[in-house]
Image 1 (cartoon, helix red, strand yellow):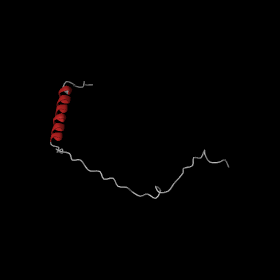
Image 2 (cartoon, rainbow, N blue to C red):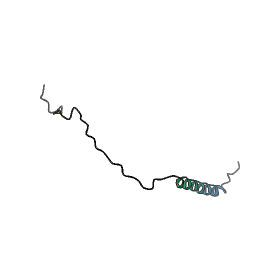
Image 3 (cartoon, rainbow, N blue to C red):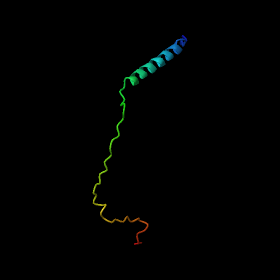
Image 4 (cartoon, rainbow, N blue to C red):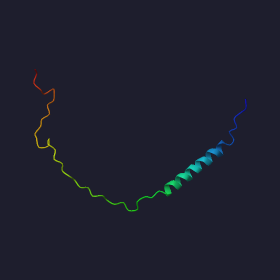
Length: 67
């Protein structure tokens, strides 16, 4: 059974890594980022929920009287 020739693996892995690095750098450099980010004004709106105007009490099962 012939031996696997691994003498070219180093240059293959190295060249692939360099190529991927260059491609990613090009891809990132061509991306358009906003130069001056603007602040959005947050407008708080009050919603009227029916349960806010009522008084409610939550009963815990342990605080109920024994039956």
